[in-house]
Structure formats: structure tokens, C-alpha cells
Image (tube, each protein chain N blue to C red):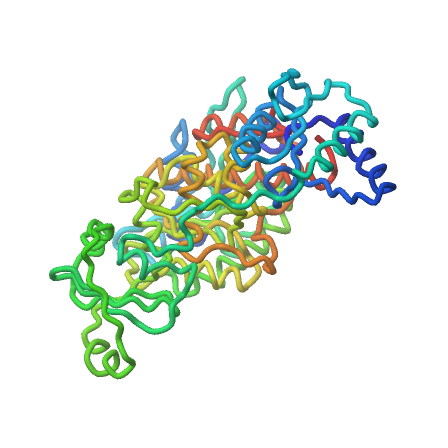
Length: 313
Length: 188
């Protein structure tokens, strides 16, 4: 559900309870929190409209509350004051239409290697064992994904390396333990956490180089951001991801940040190894009292942050 | 004070950059109680804040955000409750060169978490350019292992946009926390 007021939520909950009598179990969750089979959204709210757009994109069935009935629109519309019976009938119709299976994730590119060899060997979402030598001209580095480290073999500025990170002609050589110990380890001039390098790559990434995250994602720990180079809206996106799992389009709706920008953040979270495993508890966003909604809004405005949400209008 | 909630508190040990950070974001020159250092004086720092810094930031509708800087030294902890009550956020600043950076930060997070249970927290690591061995992921993971999963980032306390970034992060956490709270209580 997305963008619903208290009254329709209450009626929807009762409708779901009534469906249990028909042996239909429906669990209500906030849009974007978990994979869902059906959306119920208020078309007159910002969050609801964005959720409906996302559902259309994903070909997910949806019920539009406050929506304008359109003969050609496959999404049914209910009036603002839809009764419990209205909800029951609409839910049944949608679920019985055979459209209740979760949508397949659209092709995202995560299964294929990244086209940039250096980036592919720095990705921490799949930590390869062992070490590889990565070379481009005078640059020689060794990636050790399992330890999360990139070892420099020459004293060269890291920024120069990052500038060339997207080039396609990096040469990759697998290293044996013996080669590493005898030949390369003595020449290591410094090491960097690979996790941090992903976030320092940010100015060099336009967005379309990264695969899209089409499933849900949650943040495990706060990234090593370059606060001078990180877009102003990213803390808001990251804070939401620290609180619970989100899909990109739902998070874009909740934050007002464009979906492609949210995709970029989520891709970096995954590639830098900062995605939480399903079994890990949510990372550190405490539920806090919303006593100071007005002050929070005014502070946000003063410091260049736009907040959307229930407590803030 | 206009109301509880319009307070932001910077806390940290000596030389963490509290006064500098407050100056970077304030609309007026902070009022600081500085005294000459008798011990631990360094070439670049001969004064330290012995009481607190205070400044303010103008918000819309005539509201003032009160900004405090309080020393993290325990012998000065008598002033912590006075400034923390009802604060919307606490920014812990820690000098990357400090040997016990993890332990002292964890202590401050623990103590101020008790004093300001509704506040959000962020940690800003200052002077990391002077500590080439400092690596933020290791520092963050050590804090996480101690039970403190808060945003941690390197920041130059002299640079306004960097301090503002810390504050944006803090406000983002406060916003998400309040949304979670509303979801938990079922309010909409």
C-alpha cells in the first residue's frame, strides 16, 4: 500500500481479514518494504502516484484509490470512501485474475560481468577468492576481494588510478600464492579498502555504467563517502536504505529523488559490499518520536534537504 | 529556547573541531569560552573550549536553531544534560589522530544516547588528512561491533558544505526514524 490515509488503511485491513474466511491470506506491507503481489495506492497522493507508475512499469496489479475510472485502464479504481465490501471485491477480482504472482525482476545486468575489467575485479558483491594482478600502462595493482583490499605496487596517486578505472583495456592476471608472496608482496607500497574506492569512483560514474538493482536492497553500514563530492540528496536515500529494504522506484517515491539516482546509490551499495544479508538486523535507524516535525522541516529546508512523508505533509 | 527540539549539539574531545564546525554553519559568530591550554598545547592549538560554544542558525518562521558545542571530557559532563535535553541531533566529532578514537567515540555515543534518547547521531572524523593510516571502514566497523550503527564520515570542520552534509545526514536519519515510528504505531 502507498499513500493511504488512516480510514482506507483500516478498511483495507478489515477487508484482508474477511478474505481469510475465503482462505486467502493477504499481508499488508508498506510499498517498497518487501516484494509485493498487489498494490493499493491513493492516486491523489504523491507517494501513491509514484507507486502506481512503478507498478505499471513492473506490470504489477494495482487498485487505484481516488483514481479516475478509465475503461481502457487495467487498474481498477475505487472511490475515496470505498467501503470494506468494495475493497474485498476489488482484491478478490485482482487476485483471481491470475495476476497475483510477483513480477519477475527485469533484466538488470547483475548476472553478467561488468564491461570494465578493473571494476569487475573490484566488485565486492561476489568476492572472488585469490588475488589478481591488474595492469594498465604504468599502473599495476593487485586486487584481493576476499580481504577487501587493493594493493598498490607503485607509488602513484590513487586519483590517477580512479580516473582510468573505467577504461576497457586493463589486463588481468591471476596470481598464485607463491607469486604473491615471492614477487609482489615485497613491492606493495600501500593498500586501500576496496569498499571506499567504489565511493571515490562516484565522480567518474555517470550512472549508465552500473547495473540496475531491480530487487530489494538494504544497507549494512554507512559508506565511506567523500562528503565534498557526494550529491546532497544521497544521505536521505542511504538513511532510508539503512532503515529497511527498498525497491528503487518505491524509494524514489518516498524521497523525491529521481529513480536513476536512487539506482546509482543502490548499485554502489551492492558493488561495495555494503548490502545487508537478509538475516542481518536493520542497521541503526532508531524509531524516534515525531514531536518536532515542524522544526525538522525547517532545519531540512535551511540545510538543503527536501523531506517527504506522512508527518511532514 | 523557543522549544525543545530546536537544538543541535556538537560533542567531542579536545581538538576535534567543535568550535570550527559550529562557526562554519552559524549565522553569527559563536560565543565560546576559550582558555589558554596549560598542558597538551600544540603549535596549532593554544586555546581550548573549557565550557561550551553557543551559536544559532535562523530558520523559517522566525525560529532559531540553537547550536551547542560541549567538551567530551568526562570531568565536564555536568553540562551535558543541560544542552542535550530534547535535542534533535547529536554530532560526535573525533580527531582521526586520537589514539583511542573508537573507545572515546563509543563512550560518547553511549552517554549521549542516554541523555538524548530521541536524538539522531552522526559521527564526523576530522583531521584524517593528518592521519594517513586512518581507514574509515575499520573505524566504522569497530563502532558497529561495539553496538553503535551510526553514519560515520570524514569531514573537514572548516568547510561549510561538509559540516552541512553531516547535518543533512543527521536530519535524514531523524526523518526516517520518525517515519518508522509512525509505521510502528500505525499512525498515518
